[in-house]
Structure formats: structure tokens, C-alpha cells
Image (cartoon, rainbow, N blue to C red; front, side, top):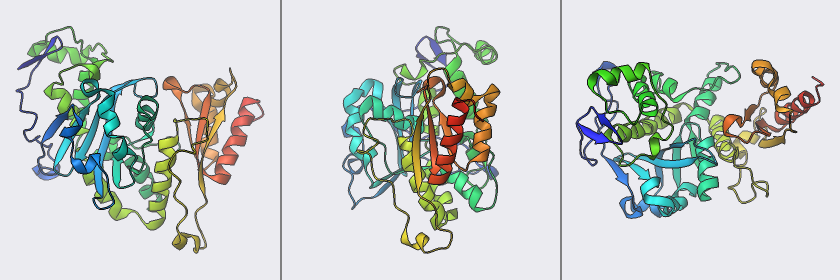
Length: 365
């Protein structure tokens, strides 16, 4: 039993470098081999090939971030990196800005593939808090949608696969995420001023008190370490299974959408001129009769007081636009920006969505 930040953790602590015990997949067998988890507070604790990316040493890693209200205005607290032989939890609170900036070459490198589930807010936090332009990502949320479309299944507007749902899908992992989800809810909501006994531990789950500052607490508890590690430890397995399914056309879409989604909430004054280029359509796809259309990101300004018209009652207006256009439409919501709409997709579909959104602002449609 270990005490951390005013409450007792009801687990036996292991060494940080000891193997992490993986969850069991179907049939009672571990999904993958055990790997050590390292908490990083100095750049020297990270692999040299990560800190100094090169074409001679291409890497594929699982990637995620944890923080408080993670976006441009929030606080990035932990950055998780999953290698085949180890997981590194980069502690931005203890290591500070210099530690995260030491990771900048790797996060911006085309020689290191970052496998992530829903990159938009992580990219926004890295850009506005540390000036990092996240690049060369494989977003498993995008990849999942491409595979579904490729296999003839239609996705409804706003029907984005969650990481919990992705892990549960037998085609990729087929493991239950319920145990981890319960732990994560508890970690975020339990009252950090209360020392928990076995009885109160259960009662707190039923009557939780939200603790939004959870990821700022130090030292990292074993529960925090395992929760952070779980968010990345399965990503490489999922990546390889997805790569087996994706055809050349879907791979191009995946690369393009990855670039555009990383840019999505990272608005700047030079129209992303200093960001990595969008991959061109490959020649082998251009010669086909149904060559894909160029994909773009459009940022539409919404005049003061007009966002309600854009969204509509219970989201009806914006949902109707999404149903009419083959484009992805995002709004900033509570995290912001609150005065813009972001549209990603083929040029013609994006222009169609823009026209319909402007019509909503003018109360035409």
C-alpha cells in the first residue's frame, strides 16, 4: 500500500522498471509480451534513436498525451511513448519545457511514425504550448473509418470509433476495456483529500467527486503509471493489424487526413505555410478512372452569436449538413476555439459544406 496525494492506493507498488503485467485477451493469453515502463524526467533517459531521428533508423511508436483540459489553453502533463521493448512516460511536470522540447525533433520527424488514436487535441496542445508541429502520424481512428469504408460498411455522421471500442473489436484486439475504464474514471473523480479504505474505495466509485487536476499530481502513483501506459501499449499491435487491411488508396487517405487532422485546431496566421506538406496523390492512383480528389482543411469563421444557428437545436442543423456532405466537420466546443468551424475532406465536398454553413449563419437553409 502506498500513500499519494492524500489518499491510499490499494495496490502493491512495483519498481518502475519492472515488467508491466498485460491484460488478458481472449483465450486467457497475453495480447503481447511484457515490457518495462520507465518514467522519464530527463532527455538522457530516452532512446538515442528517438532523440536523434534519422533515415537509417526508422521507428514506429505508440503515442498519446495526458493532461488537464488538453488543448491550447490546458496543461500537458504526461507524454506516452510505446516502443516494442519498453514504454516511456515523459513527465512534463517534473521534466519541464526543456524535456518536451528535447522531443521536438522526433515528434516532427518523418522518420518516426507516431501511432495515435484521435490526434487533434494532442497536436493542438503540443503546438500552442511547446511550438511542436506533430507530423507523420497514423491515426487509428481515421484508419478504422477507412477500413470500414473499404469493406463496404457505411459510417453514420459523428460515428467515430472510441479507443475503448477499438480495443474491443476482435479484428484488432478483442479485449475488454471495462476494467481500465473504471480505473480511469475513478482516478479522475475520486476526492484526493480522502484516505480510502477498502469500503470507502467502492463507495467513492458510486458517489465520485471530480478531480480535474489528477494528472498534475506527483509523484506518479502506480495506478497513474498503469493507466497512462495502457493508453499506448496496444497501439503497435493495432497498427500492424490495420496495415494488413488498408489498400493503397486508403493508405493515401490515411496519410493526408493525418496531416490535416494534426493541423485542425492549430490555427496560425500564415495558413499553415510552416507545417509539413500534404502528401500528393500517388501516380498509381491518378491513372485509375476513380482517382481520389485532393483533400483540404478549411477553417470557417462564425460571426458572434451565429454558432447557435450553425449547430441548431440539439445539433440538428450541423448534423443535417454532415449528412449532406462527404466531409468531416468539427467545432471547438467548450475547449475552443468557439468562433470557428473546421472542415476536412475532398475540395468539392468542403466547398459544399462551407456554402451550407454560411447559409445557416444567414438563416437561408
